[in-house]
Image 1: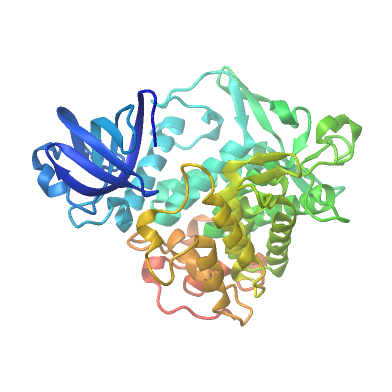
Image 2: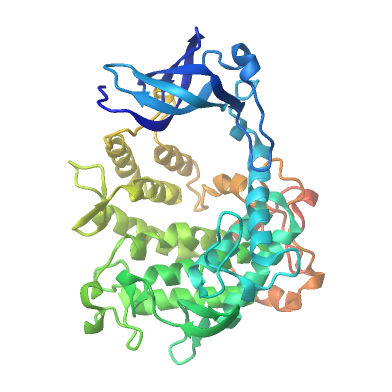
Length: 498
């Protein structure tokens, strides 16, 4: 590789050797880099959010040993062949045990606490959680403007993050935020269309002088202006579904199901499959002339976003066959219409015009997770996409893992193979949901709330969704009398549901 100009950049790789203040690295794609260290180079151990600076510049021989993963930032100089960087900063990623610090279970628990704690304080201060104070945009220090728009999908994403933070850490304060945010969405940004038996969500609400005022039904964004885009309705559900996984609140489920009916009745293409990207706000039709270039169109967001935003979690929470069928349908649409041209590694975001790199990984992962179905048809496609991804410049699999032996390969292929292990009709990938959910390893007591503080506990036992309840299979059997799942710290053996 020949560089004709200087530039500042970061590079990550594995130590091959360290001598004479020169650090010889092999990058993740197998390239060779030489990092020159000076007396002013800052060398530190990787630190998590909230941790102090950990200087290791006085113990370089202990930390810069062959095989350790490091990241260097500095000025790259023109060279022929091996790249040369004058490093101003070096971060040692592997710990003293030779394992990357982020592979220790407590790392992610501490990190989610740091992130969730920042948002909790920046949005609501130290007092009660009041979503009228929510701000869509925050500075890095947590400050915000007085006049703005509270956007539904960003509130829902915050709710999702807080519910997930509770599932990982067991911290009650995060669940309080998730429940308060879910209530705010339902009370202020939801519209129940009783005539059509559907639920849809406002784009947002204007805030003037710190007070929420006018509601905005249609989108305010340029490409979607004065229309109802599918992705805004999709992401309105992500926080509600994740909160429902924790609490089982039947009111949330009713709104979720109403929004799914909206997709099926007004966004779905019942003749060719998939979902249209926009509907007209008055006719709720994807074919209205008012939609202009978005008329009768489909894109990645309207078809591919259902699964990662809410549909996987909805299936995990309810075990309902109809959501499993909807997942399979979206996978079929992805494989049929969004697969890249065989000469290109890029995904077709809209068919057939636009190619976008950022969806490549998501495209491989979705049919991989969908491999829980008995059918095996997605595996060759997921592998083929993985091969295409490797063709993207400056990307591809780690050279360190290429020779990992049997079992190495694309994550999508491993997920699909894992799914084949169970042919008895159960969603076999439930075991993969365990670390990401309520029973994450090392998370402490990540149990669910006692029922006593919920006014709907009696309604809960009557409205409990049928179909097995995937999350309930991971945790102990629900106590019918109390109406909620028992705490994970008290769990015994997993029982089948009656």
